[in-house]
Length: 252
Picture (spheres, rainbow, N blue to C red):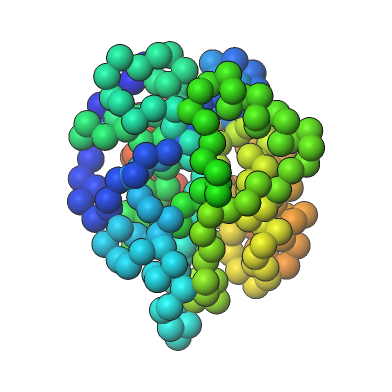
């Protein structure tokens, strides 16, 4: 059930995007890749552009033009909320979103923004060149087809200078027991050798599934933290303190 969360996110502009899951295919932003509530459990999306922290220049500017002298932290996430309207949501739309100060955010998006706000990290949102549908059934079918085809959906914007970041948080919803295929595109396009990757995700019951092992295989030269944070879509609305506690344990 949707809950309105009060949270000061004044440093960030809000853009909406997150995908919901179907009853077992994709664990929406509020869940992982099981068949429950939403097969494609969408991730939440705050109103951010594809750019780092919303107090900074836009995505490509902040991710691409800073000097490499001081290594920084980046939060990358993918989220597809199924609505931007906080009123009269369907159950599937509620599964994939949280509402903060009247703004609809995807579940994974919300996690990403809390992480960025509490670490001072830049934000980069992974977005498909052709935006995903917000129709639940169609989204579930599209996600399954991409997985079956081992598709590599095109990403709309790029991180121009990854070298300035030494730690990258990577967040995604669990779709059909795996990462959304656009995450495979992301890992194909960048070499994270020598960098720290910290996974986080949202799900409807499946947690990370085997996605952390998959990331380790895809980025064998990186240090992939096996103690990432996975939060159920049913708990995401009350998860801020848990996210902050997890970050404290990581030394942030």
